[in-house]
Length: 68
Image (cartoon, rainbow, N blue to C red; front, side, top):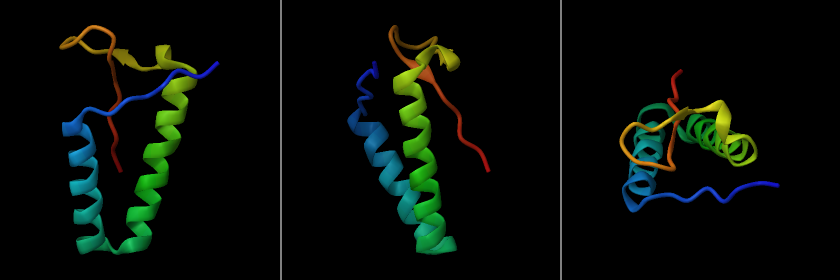
């Protein structure tokens, strides 16, 4: 059973800002690639959240870091 992944308003805005930056600097294809990678990781989080580090800032959150 998958859990619901919810965005904070800040997280959604940061994702949009990131994708707009990538479009501007690297093009739409790269932005699509990053978007789909984010979606894939969110799906993994919903299925098996334990594979990601527990947040030290807020109970019930997990931490996932993206890199190149």
